[in-house]
Length: 74
Image (cartoon, rainbow, N blue to C red):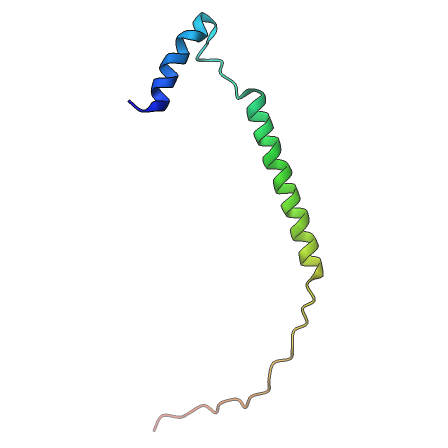
């Protein structure tokens, strides 16, 4: 038995009859984690847009090269 399972089996009796396995919700901690991830993604997208706006890309013209002549079979 792992340490996590041992701790869980010790904590479950403390919940008593009020613990309903069918109505478990993520609670405030789940909301805070989700909100932190959303703020992080928003900040990364804002930073990416700012960096992409600074890119100055000017494509150079393709070098002129002679076109190869087709060879004919004898």
